[in-house]
Length: 133
Image 1 (cartoon, rainbow, N blue to C red):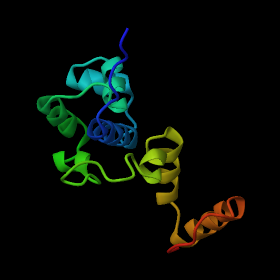
Image 2 (image 1 turned 90 degrees about the vertical axis):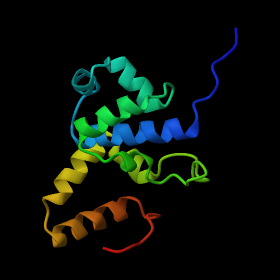
Image 3 (image 1 turned 30 degrees about the horizontal axis):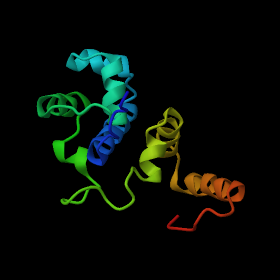
């Protein structure tokens, strides 16, 4: 039996952006699927990039998740996926429930408190690169 071909990198990228938008809105796969008329299993397949979505389905996601169409393609070069081949560390973090909760909590902190929290994270991960505080 032949195995299925690997998902196209653009489908994987758009799927990762779909998951990021969904989790940022704190919506379950089931709730999003009901909103646009597909099953939660189909949402899973879209998010993994194993199933391609039609233009009309992507358009419905835009409306349901409040994102412009171009947002789903941000980070892609016009000639294809960026050399990294996948979502960046930020996208991976924000696609997790913990990442979304952390971002929402951090947004409620004062700038001074955010710097203190970042200092704690840097103490736990000393190899964390420095940057703008």
